[in-house]
Amino acid sequence: MSNGGPVVVMGSSIFQQWFNVQDLLPYKATINLAVGGTTTLDWVDWIAPQVLPLKLSIVLFYAGSNDINRPYPVADILSRTHQMLNQIHEAIPDCKVHYFSVIRAPQKQPVWDQVDQINETMQQNAAKQDWLTFVDLNPIFYDDQGSCLE
Image 1 (cartoon, rainbow, N blue to C red):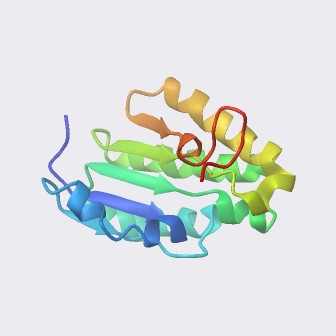
Image 2 (cartoon, helix red, strand yellow; image 1 turned 180 degrees about the horizontal axis):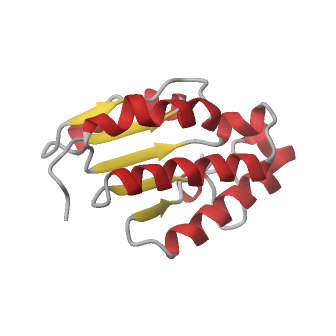
């Protein structure tokens, strides 16, 4: 059951530009902390001082895309992501976390294997946790054959 705290949107530019998120969740206070260009390395440092004091009830989190651009190793991206999500869960056990997949953007095609590895690992991890949901964004953009939808 939700603790009644706000919904916190965090991550990079994809979520920073999610201007109507409050309209989609009119029953909850919504705080958008997303910052364009950020990586999991940034968010690891910001979770405790910026996010946990909000006593959030739901987190919507998009991260990993800019890490791949750096390029940070997939193992490091996953490690930091798990660290952050677990930190939220340990501090606020009744908070529900929704991790949004890294998008298989056309400019990332040479590293789609890394994108897929992150997404598959996060999906598997979410399946083991009742507080964590994996949201796959890629079906919104691509058909079953991997072609970009127009």
